[in-house]
Length: 171
Image (cartoon, rainbow, N blue to C red; front, side):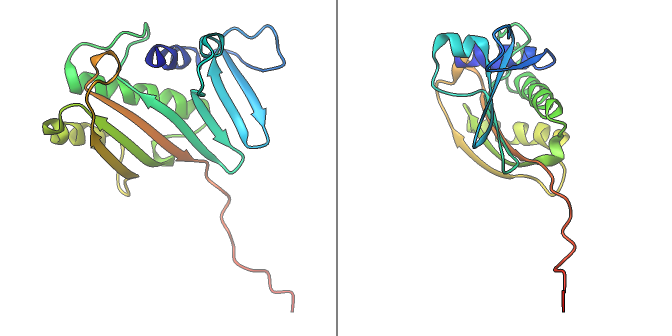
């Protein structure tokens, strides 16, 4: 179910985003709190799920919930690890672009992979989307991923800050 909600969110990212106070919201609801902006698909809210699909903190960190390789209808793409990985990165690109960011802004990833023997194949695709310096990364073998997926990927991005020019000497 979480996968379906995440997929619905990704499909809707190009749509209008409304605030929680806007009762006409139909796609994605953005709620602002003292901590930042929380984005949830209306379906997530209607189902009462205890998570947000994406969060941008006031400190400039963006947390994207775990993604599996689905198409625009929420179905797992055919073709195994390779096709699923490309689908995940298309979804990730949609999230990042929605916030005016790109893959260069990703600072940390967590990879959960069903068959660790496919690690090399995953890395081959991963390096098509990220270039040095690579984000920090953790990985683990995981059995029983949603929809029988080969992998799940969640990432953290950071909004760039203006450059610091050193201390101002007032003496």
